[in-house]
Length: 159
Image (cartoon, rainbow, N blue to C red):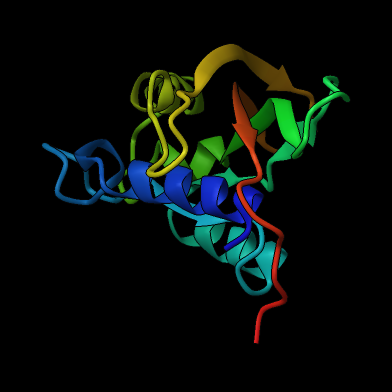
């Protein structure tokens, strides 16, 4: 399929599959929802999730940089994956929220993704940073990870 989409889907799947992000987590009244940037109407889903749960993880579309120009096929020296944790503190820390602060969720993202090898790629994600993003209404952290990856075949159009 498409390299960047495959990486994004693998990251979202990995996080969604962890108990920390589910409502099955010990003592957690609500899950921490993980969504991908490209699925449906993202802004509406973020607003809905923040309104209902108070917190959401958004796996942004990865970006790629190729600095090694003398290769037969494109090899990306740096594929950057960013997971943005957005928290409405008032809602999230109330009795109906997840109770998990954005900083802790960003650390959990780092824990579960550092060293993770998306299927079929052979290269692991490595933690680069956890950074605070200025926003007047929400508490936002971004967990930034990088990896190397290469295109194995010519991209084909989707049907």
